[in-house]
Length: 195
Image 1: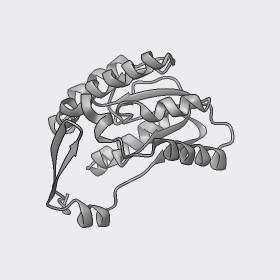
Image 2: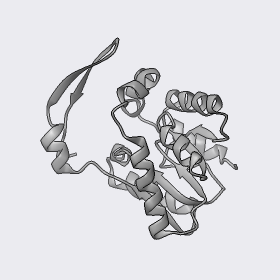
Image 3: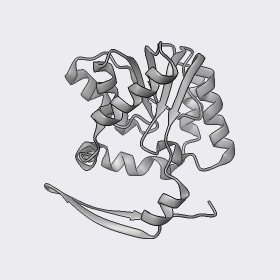
Image 4: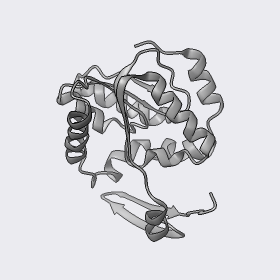
């Protein structure tokens, strides 16, 4: 894996604290909080997209990979996966997960607006509404251009979004308390439609 160190330095110089802090704080408990997510079904769905639109997907870059749960499943399906996330704490958890499972998944902390790779991939995925963290049009264009720069010709960029309607219905000025075993946390949601 080739990494552009200048891009990596610039990515971290420009990251915003509000993008980083929540995941720095919850990285150690993230998998327990997200235990309700059916990662296997997601993995099957992503693999079906690969089969439908690009029959030769072998190499996959997962941006905003979190703690690497999807990467473990994609690797088990035979894909060569590289992971990245803007949160060094989440990447630390992912790396430990990969080491414990004995799987060779490179994991680095980087920003999807400045991908530090010279390597090209057959597919790039950004799941679980993670693209929604890109809130400015110029930054979204950067992220798409960066994705394009690391994809093979005909490669796939697969991402999902939380729509404005969904945000207004479920996350506008809302808070919820969840208890998971010995963990209790409050999620406070605010949605600014003017953005």
